[in-house]
Image 1 (tube, one colour):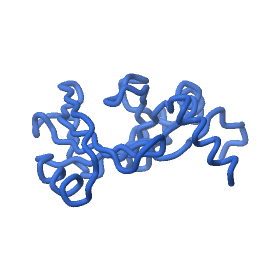
Image 2 (cartoon, one colour):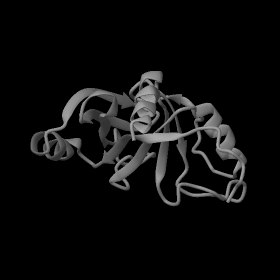
Image 3 (cartoon, one colour):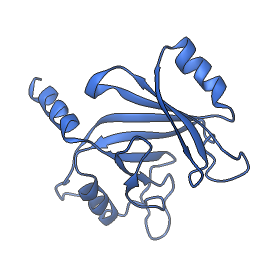
Length: 162
């Protein structure tokens, strides 16, 4: 465990991403039965994904729920395996987080910081470590998401009100 001061904060859950071979079944559960609100679709050949972006809750504390299916079930990444594909965390300073976490030996997935499906800067923590980077998501793909200023302020206000 490190004693160095962490130069960023994890604010809360930004999203969960769920995959399946056919997002129609996912949509039937999450939208039709559970009542989440679909807000847009996103397709990426590079990421082998066709997804519906839905929201649970409202306002700055809403959580995005991505319903994903692969464009080609034979190609990687396999967004449907495992079905709970990844968890997204709001962070207040993504660049500082990545720099510091790499210094702690955390392994990141290829691609570095880039724009995510919802337009925020994102970076993925690899689910497995390797010799050069022994720390990992411990089997879980984790998306670190740069929180916009209004989200940071909302989390700060909520923390101050405690």
